[in-house]
Image (cartoon, rainbow, N blue to C red; front, side, top):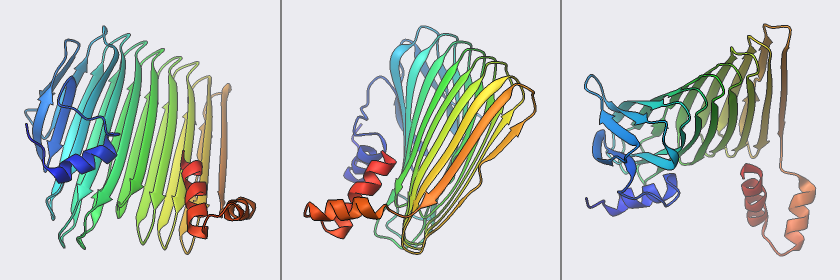
Length: 307
């Protein structure tokens, strides 16, 4: 079906410029499923009791992708959606999500996406999620994602999440429950400016022997924006985890980092690190000597830091 230019432009940002109406996909637009498609191994069904979809990925899935972008352009709208993913034993899949709000009005626009992943034994899932706001209106762009991940034994889950720009307020809730020998890799990248606020809460329960988690958060806070990070790693078995939070603070911004580790087993090995600082002055001077303006040099450093 035909997609308007505003939606196309937002999709270009949140879906890496790769969204097509083919393969396994579901495009949600202003609170409705606009279009969707299945493949032989991936089936998408609309929920009957509430807004959202159930995505069934069978064990024969190898190297396929599922695209589930959300675009909201109606000012004053609050959109809540519940998406559940059922990944069968041995499946290998990439799930590309993202939400973009284009608010041209004076009322707040909000999207709450509640995603649950049920990952069976030996399955390997990569989940990519981008959040983005734009529009000339004065109304806020609010995104509150909730992510719940249930990992059975020997499964692997990679979470790549990014808040690019333009999101005025966000509260991010992530909960992970890990079985034996399961692996979790998380990379979170956040950018705030103006008077934007973001709170990122994450709790990882390592319940199975041999489970391992690596959590990395990188952020840049500009203007008068504020950020709060609260990752919690709980070792309930013989497990390994490393939690790292690094932030660049600029202008009059505020950053609060609260990494928390909780070992409840003799063989739980958990490490946390946190660092907040300003842009490295030597790097700034070096780039200025190459002919860059201060703003250009800062942009290069910030992009490299978030990459």
